[in-house]
Amino acid sequence: MGFFSLGEAKDYVFFKPGTWWVYQNTRTGLKDSINVQYSILDTLESSGKKWRFLDEVFYVQSKSSSTGHYYFFYQRKGTAAVTEPVKKVLPLLERRDPFEGDINCFYFPFDAYPNQSGSVSIFLNKQDTMVMNGKIFKDVAIFYLTNDNTEPEPLKRNPAKYYWAKNYGLIRKDLFDGKFMGDTSKLYHSWKLINSKIIQ
Image (cartoon, rainbow, N blue to C red; front, side, top):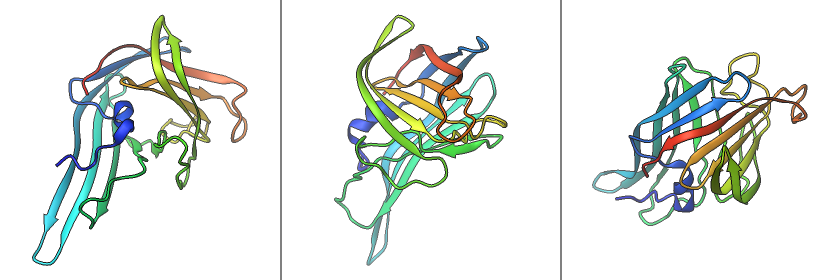
């Protein structure tokens, strides 16, 4: 049915199997490729004689080649209404097997600050263009996280920034060596996109 359309957010967060990204760590030089294994963007329907229920599903599963971690990026919203669209996109990102944590590192509309618990994500700004490794990315949305719970100890509670580019997804992540919540005075490392194959 395609009920869960995602709107403009789809260009930032939804990718089909066959998509991959290669990132490089600025601190260690380590490269890591993330490969999309499965994705769905649709409405699942169940009904009875007197009821009809729609479960709107956005889900992307990918895997890291260097660590073996799985990344689950998803949002589900059940509704009894047939024509009510999803007005806010607030997907959850989980790092699993082994489980490291989960965060909200993206939301849309960008000016709609959603209710969150745990690590708080704040939209900072959107840049029309950003040049990185000689490549130009357009419509880059930047989010700040008070603490990135997907990181292993002892970095789990450090603040971070996520950079999302239209039609590319996540192009950069900065992790800070914060001494207190909100401290971004010292960069610990960045993961920057150096190659990709995108299928949307």
